[in-house]
Image 1 (spheres, one colour):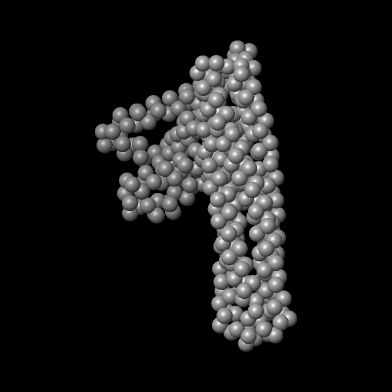
Image 2 (cartoon, helix red, strand yellow; image 1 turned 60 degrees about the vertical axis):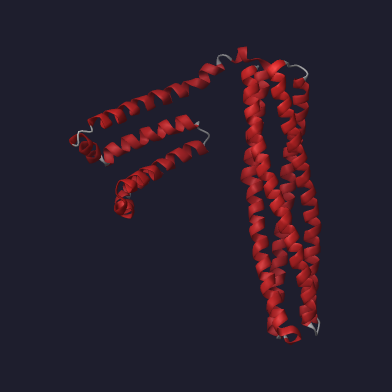
Length: 329
């Protein structure tokens, strides 16, 4: 539907690229093709099948919307190009039909695959789920938290600058305004704390699954030999590294909770001095400590993000080893 929409508004899009000549045309086609290809891949369709489905769709719509293009190719003695595009169209149809039949063909041979292949297939599915959970949930939450810390840090820097400028002559209205801002920051910190708790629960589930997988790999290592044994040993090493990283994430999250508590205490003390003390400048040390704490929190979040990225890479490597093991089983 999105691709049809691109062609429906082709005149507006073409106006953008009209000054680019053939390059603009190519970019327009790529943009239109990227939409269905990305949707297919997003729904789990294999890359090859996604490409052929996209080509079939683009070829049909281009004949409906741009027949002059093909006529122009024929008039410029480029009929072979037309023929090649048509042949590729039929090849794409053949490939899509062939690829669609593959699952049923493999399913008839499940009896020959044995329990090892069935177990490996299940583990590949677990690796896919783990990678998606880290990428779509953990990484997303960590990135949001990093942006939140950056925003809060900027606000605190501005508040500290105002207090340093006015010192103990800070007007009452300004005191109330700053106190209100700090109160909102404290509420954001509570949301932040809830996100940390969600991350902890997510990694607890992942860690539990990985520990079970590690035990299964140890049992399988005792049953296999030769090249398959080398592959399982490599899988074991990767799984142990993943579990170690997950423990590091737990340690960061525990430490993060302590820093958040300290940060909140600094904000509370700063607000108390601004609202009730005759010397609002005394709030400055608490703001400075809060900013230092934020820097530490930022470093931990960056480390967590780095570990999440490494875990995603390790799940991909683990998946490759599992596929190699299935081929040798």
